Image (cartoon, rainbow, N blue to C red):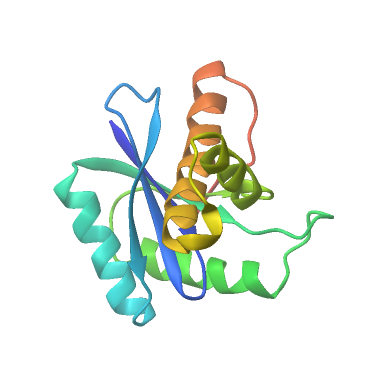
Length: 146
């Protein structure tokens, strides 16, 4: 079963896709935000196109682990997405995913500041890879089903 990973921001949604074995997450695309219902519809179109069985959304908690303003926005969007599909939609802690994505892009010889969309899809891949790794190892993770 393939899993779709999302990094939901105010301007863009980074999208990553897990391989069919649940082992590897790769950046897929970035969606420019147009409005929550149409953004959700585009995500679900991508999920259908890639035969996705589950969606994982990064929850941007504060450094202390609390739900701040952006996390409340992402939680609202996640509920909207969950209402529009029968697929399981889960949230996972995404703290530092963008920092990790920028680090990985630099290591690959890319300049993150030149392409924010690439950082967003790479951050979605970091979020999804963390989820897949924790699922495969059987360790507890912070995934919450919406």
